[in-house]
Length: 234
Image (cartoon, rainbow, N blue to C red; front, side, top):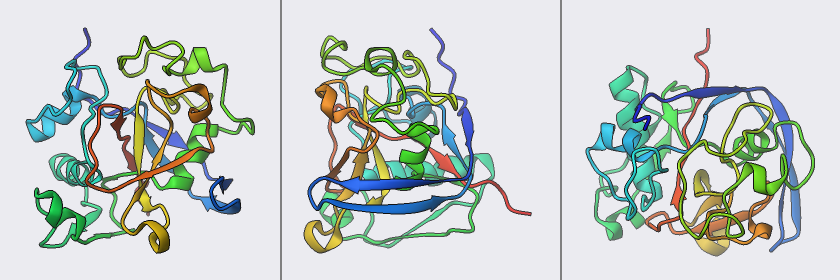
């Protein structure tokens, strides 16, 4: 088994994407700058190599790490950035510790000029997922994703399904992925955006446009994250 902890990043070109929300029936268009995105979600081996922790209930080096909160993912991004000599993107307030109650009330700021690892923005995520396609998915579902219809109701190793045209694996299915943004702060407060669908979801949840939400302290066995980086300027 490949237990590599290297982070493979894929170049995602500049583009424009139209996002939509079924709850509010709102649509909005976003210009997306070129970025780098993880080839697949962060694996358990990659997470453990930085944090020393293996929070997932089902163990396997090549399985996507799960049972990680949005805050866990943000801290991992900063720690990996520091280890690899990049400028950390996130500045965490004093309340953003390991206690869930403190985290829920904690603050985080993002340094847009930093070149370190970060969570993808929601528009970046959908633009990268679609990879120039316009349909609900970038390929036949059974070929590109692990979902309830083919997963055997269990998580699978990262990168095992056919990638999209830009070389990104598991953008749909296997695990949901945290994004940076708040979902709807006026209605849901600090709830963050989830994208992609998971191994236990029906086919209708595994579509490029589907938006979900949860509190930033939420941890479950079909939720992980993928890394992003902004190219160095100059």
